[in-house]
Length: 315
Image (cartoon, rainbow, N blue to C red):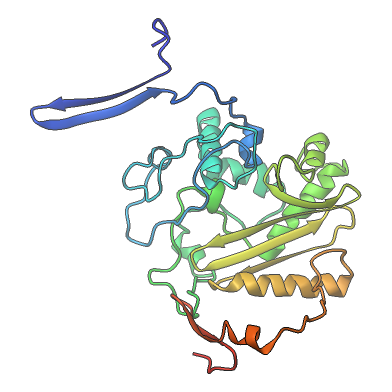
């Protein structure tokens, strides 16, 4: 390949009427910018795969190499760069799985172990771990997942062999400890989690809303950093204001918990006078009876239930 300047080659071998093996080498294209670790963390690397569905109890769990290659028993497509790196922000759990593989290759240690040693313990996150699946002793204390109607999910929590993107077990208190550790690092306090220069960069937006793992909003003198969590039967939300040190973490074990978490966040924002995330009151706009009648009817959302518009009975 080097001698003939061939960027990529794909090979399949047939032996005695059976496809013995198939493999690809090199790259599919040479006109994209190199992918950097910083861009992977900021979701600007152009990598595919938004979310990761996990694996129900009893199902085979793939290795990280299988996940990246989209190879059985992985239940997601291959992770690859399909847009030029550094040009746009697009959330990619697949990109964080690349980071997970990179950390393992460089350190020779599991992601769960190195994240515990380098992040969780230094941040005093004593009730957090990247265990997938969760050991039975810890599972007995964990909140179990529920569907949109409040029914327990069969088999309990799914297993996520992509811990960097989807595998953290935690508590609201521990999530706020993480927020405090990042803020203390940015302020240069002793014994902190991160180098001050790096911590200062984290809440500064890049090409999109994400920057080194966090979603950031606001002005430089009034910045907030946040992140949501959405997994089968769980919905969570964390927000922290860098300047004031205010924040809230909400974790739920229901598929509709995101709406609840946002309502609680708005209540906390109102109670503490936050500049954002409070309920915004808007004046209603009168519309004619003809327009009001157009959407009238009963609607169904699979897995959730029905609702009515126009005074009809709720399902």
